Image (cartoon, rainbow, N blue to C red):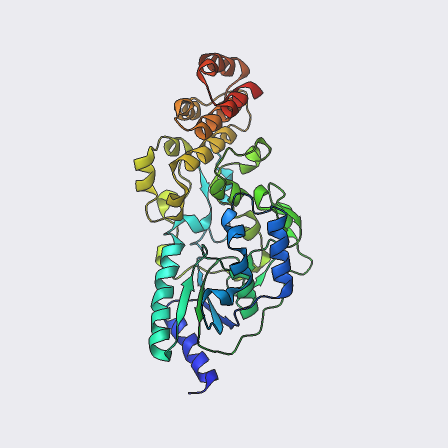
Length: 382
């Protein structure tokens, strides 16, 4: 069998195993990609994501992850949602008393779905072609979007995410690093042109320029990776987003080619589409774990999740002077939460939901007993 025939057989097997996109490249990155990544870290744009800096050398040199590596096989699984969400992924932002989760988080955790399939594919690859291989999904030290662009699976848009001509914004990526030497595919060209829809829609202005993102301003980072209080600068912009943000992905014109995923495990669960904020605020740790079992949201943990829900509750009243008793009653118990980050979010939410007189009464009742300086500051800011 020729090398080209081997590559075609590997490609065909990957498609048979349920991967929607397949691409091949050498385990190397361009000088520009490495320089941009180094600058990203040096400027501190990665925020709390210290793991990006700790394994920066491996990210710049994917070949170091496997002795004798010759090829990276980039594999993609389409996670396009069912209609009408596929046509308008931002529809949930209009219901301010309900939580909005990023589309990818409404189904089963893609880490598990993709990695299980990658392992099966790698096992077949090694058995059939007598090679070594390692698999990676998202959390590994791999600049996967840059590698995917080298394989022709897509290109990195101005929002720094991958865009596919076949699936738009909705591809989960995984990588197989192997000692099997296979021909590389032609890299995909950048098809963004003069469009800047993804940059202009960002609620927190996280893009300082095309292809440059400050993660510390990104709502996905703030609601998922960031562990402390969310800065007042960004709270209103979060609206009812309680896990991630799809804005820059959703407005991409290439989504006209998006299609519903054939992987049922990745499709949105009904109970995770527009859940009521008041009900989410009432979840204790056990109920949170039960509701979000098997999803990416569970990895967030109860504390950060409730923090996000409380910020959304504060935004649900749209700064009106009249309070909604249901929203207030859902928020108020968290003033006594053992976690300062939760108490602080509850204080801010009530400052938005209550009129000045009612909020002052609460402050007089709670401030004297508050020992955390950041929470005390929240009380005193109104």
